[in-house]
Image (cartoon, rainbow, N blue to C red; front, side):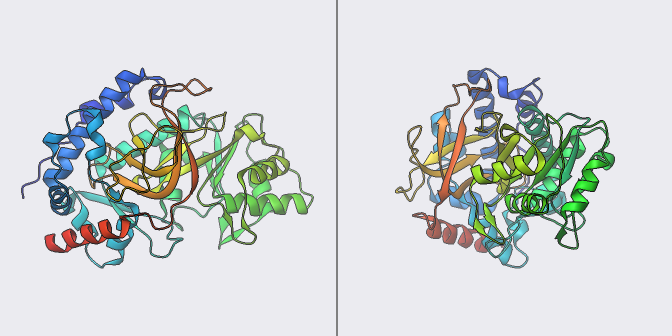
Length: 390
């Protein structure tokens, strides 16, 4: 099979280059997103042997995707499929839609459920995803290029997860001097509140933000509160949380409880504690605005699929719960058409505005799905196509 790059970078550029994509007219955004996805689907169908075979078995080909209503026909890949591929030695590149020599970098999930998942990225996809994440943290997170961000994680040299690597790349694209405006609080797997306070107090003349998983915020907040320590951050300081809601020590922690702890420990107002639903499969994030709504970027097509439909082609109405599925046209190195293991609901549609003024759907995470109907069979089907293509 001869490689043909069918990605529509002209349309992708139109989406990303507007002054604020989250304020783009919904009809315009919808057409651009559809055009980019249609080209993306053709690209992966032509260049990805196992995915093409999977689509053929599903009786779907690019010519059948004629309008936005047809996007639900694009065959979805279970998120756990990438974990299974990653566990099998030497076949990660076989799920790629670009030649192996074009793979510039691999990113992994944290592997909290066991086997980490590995994702191949070519340079153009990596640059485009990074650019899109800069837009998210600029236009929804309201991080200024002069601000300072302290990670409650190890440095990228010590952690290869997308949560750390992806955010660091994002800040390198957003901040003026990232080497001076980014710090890391975890050394030798130790998160010390006194060192965190010292680090933050040394930063002068910049708005200071925190970033990390909820359990790290829970741990450091407890240390500060129980130790009677004091740190007053800035009026516009924010705490960005992403990842699971289980504490390493105390089990599950609620968002409201954690927000209150962060406010008490760091004097960050609760409207500035912004959780993000991490889309680890595409190294992106659905970030909360000041009203606590998680915003879907206008370049991603998100839908909620019926839990009782093993084909995953049935979407449910606005406000109803189901499997979160997304189609991302920015990635050319693998088909970023994912059905997650998460149950959620859409709060508003692509044509509506959030109270913050941004257009597009917002999403509420409800729970983990367990073992959704059809998931195991589709993973087995996809793995069979990968093995046939080896």
